[in-house]
Each structure stands twice: as structure tokens, then as C-alpha cells.
Image (cartoon, rainbow, N blue to C red; front, side):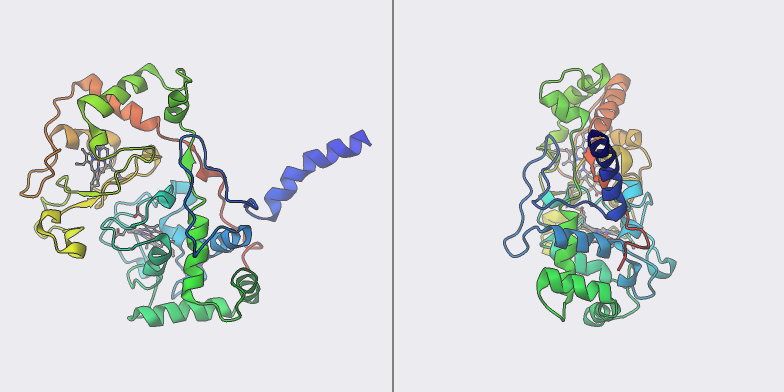
Amino acid sequence: MIRIFVLFAALAPLAGVARAQNFPEKPPKPPLGLAKVHWPEDNPYSKDKAELGWLLYFDNRLSGDQTVSCASCHSPKKAFTDGQAVSIGIKGQKGARSAPTVINRAYSTLQFWDGRAESLEEQAKGPIANPLEMTLEKEANQAHEASMAALRAVPGYVKRFKKVFETDKFTIDDVAKAIATFERTVLSGNAPFDRYQAGDKKAMTAAQARGMDVFYNKAACDSCHIGFNFTDGSYANIGIGMDKKDPDLGRFLITGRDEERGAFKTPTLREIEHTGPYMHDGRFKTLEEVVEHYDRGGIKNEWLDQRMKPLKLSKTDKQDLVAFLKALSGEGWQNIKPPTKQQLP
Ligand code: HEC
Ligand code: HEC
């Protein structure tokens, strides 16, 4: 009897892994250091919905020529980005901006470098209709219809959508809701920084602890990268791109407010060690280059944020600051694996 029990205990985890991504019945508990995830009233968590979103996220059939999925540009192997300065979409086309990570996007409403999408649900519809990213069509409606037609032709999807959304004719909004539900489970916490904050003073190295002091005091990085997710959720011009002939004007293109020319969203710094190249145009390959940019006080231009000043950091300060940024590498997202061919409907 005991022997049988031991055998079962040993096999159970394996069986789980082989079946599918294990989404819990209740919304997953975020790792140490993170706040509770807000689940929208019109799109609450469910295990089946998260699993459906996970399948869609990795499915090339969402794109016009069935070659590109969300994961092409936001891959779990690359901390949910693509390791490229700018992304490559359908037919090998280059986009204009760098792909941000999907990790911890649950904690913001506005999405994209310029905040043009109001939610993860709205965001997910963007790439499916973007001719540079996933579609061969010119109109958003046609693009969405084309990928709906591809999905409706897959009996496994029809079944899953029926179970989750209780409909035979699922729409692009249902697709977006499922993908957003999955995305809200892609988290990073329990980093050395979090364990240090929770009282384990050995969790960070001496250099990281000194770097933390540079971050919060000498360099005041937290005047923008604030809180548990290291972002104020706002937009700032730190000079990136303003040195180009035809600068990307970022947030200004959405709001038309003059003071927002060249302003981009302050990104999270969690997993920053794994999400380079950095900035909206992917210009910096290393964190050392990023720190040099801030040490210089950014790139001068008429709209430069007033918080950007030359920092006069010593060589050790800079090394410590980079070490601290690496203390923000945590866990959670590593558990997410792409579906195997057999698991895709
Ligand atoms: C061809 C590459 C590519 C594909 C495919 C792609 N993305 Fe993106 N994604 C990007 C780029 C580039 C941006 C930034 C664009 C911008 O800000 O203007 C982005 C932005 C995002 C953001 C906003 C992140 C933030 O920090 O604001 C999310 C979330 C996201 N993508 C999820 C998805 C999902 C879900 C899919 C599939 C439906 C998808 N992406 C498909 C390249 C891609
Ligand atoms: C005035 C607000 C502000 C301050 C102060 C600030 N940042 Fe940023 N940070 C931003 C914005 C905005 C971006 C994105 C800019 C862009 O791409 O145009 C950014 C981008 C970054 C990136 C790249 C993130 C990515 O995913 O590409 C890193 C790393 C970073 N900041 C670290 C720091 C450090 C370290 C400090 C302190 C020395 C600091 N920041 C101070 C606003 C700020």
C-alpha cells in the first residue's frame, strides 16, 4: 500500500506537466513582492480561459500566413520579449519599436510604449490587425475576421470557446479576453530584492545593496521607476530618439499635448537583466550603456524631463547600480512553457 502511494506521488507531477500548462482553479497567487492582480469585472479569471489564452498566445494560426504568434515577439525563452532592437513581423518586416516584455503587464491598464491601448484586452487586438506584425489584410476588421475564420475551422477551439464563453460564434473580443487572462498570469516576483525587503539581508550581495542606495538616493531613479513594479505608469522624455532626424514623438502622437513630445512610458525594471536591448528603439545592448545614458543626464532636447540631470556617478556607483538592477530578476514566468504540437487544438 505504502509502496503504491510513493509510486503515485512520484508520477503525479510528471503527469501534470505532460498534460498541459497547469493553471490553478483560483487566480494564481502572485510571487513575493507583488501586489494582488486586479481581474476586470467583465473578464474574470477562470482556469479554462487562462488555458485557452495560453494556447492562442502561442498559435501561429492567428496570423495571416500562419507564421507568427504573440510568442514570436514575446517569447518565454527571452523573458517574454524577442531579444531584438526592433521586432520582425510577418514576411520578415521590421517594426519601428522594440517589443516590451509581457511580464507583469497585469499591473498596468494602459499598454504600448505610448499607452494607446486602454487594457490588455484592447492591446491584444492590435498586433492581429497590424500589417507589420500579423496580418496580410489592410483593414482591421478584415484582419480580425481572417484570424477568426482560421480559428473557427479548428474543432478543438470551437469546443473550448463554447465552454469558456458559452457561444458557438466566438468573436475577436473573446480571443482578446482569453489572451489577456493568460497574460495576467505571466508574473515576476520573489527576486533577491523582494527577499531582502522581506528581511533576508543575505538575499542581495553587498554591491547590490550599495546599488540600491544609488538607485533610490544618489540617482533618484525612483522618481519614475517607483513602487513594487518599478514604474509610475506615466510617460517621460528622457531623450531617446530625440537625436534622430525624424524622431518618434511617442505619447504626443496619442494626446497631441506639446509637453509630451518624445515622451514614452516608464517601463518596469523587473527582469531587466533578461529583456535587452533597451529603450523603445532598442538602442542600448547593455545595462552599462543605459546607466551611462542616465549619468550624462539623458539626451538634451526642448522637452527633456526636468528630473533628468547629469548624475556624476563614480565608476563603483555605476557597477553597483547595474548589480542592483540584476537583483530584480525573479521568478514566476519561467513556469510557462509553450504548448507542444499535441497540446494545440
Ligand atoms: C511582430 C512582433 C510582435 C507580435 C507578433 C506581437 N507583438 Fe506585442 N508588441 C510588439 C511591439 C514592437 C510592441 C510595442 C509597440 C508600441 O509600443 O508601439 C508590443 C507591445 C505589446 C504589449 C504592451 C506592453 C507594454 O509594456 O505596454 C503587449 C501586452 C503585447 N505586445 C502583447 C502581444 C500579444 C498578446 C500579441 C499577440 C496577439 C502580440 N503582442 C504580438 C511586438 C509584437
Ligand atoms: C524622468 C523619468 C525617469 C527617470 C528619472 C529614470 N527613468 Fe529609466 N526610463 C524612463 C523612461 C520613460 C524609459 C523609456 C524611454 C524610452 O524608451 O524612450 C526608461 C527606460 C529605462 C530602462 C530600459 C527599460 C527597457 O525595458 O527598455 C532602464 C534599464 C532604466 N530606464 C533604468 C533607469 C535607471 C537605472 C534610472 C536611474 C539612474 C532611471 N531609469 C531613471 C523614465 C525614467
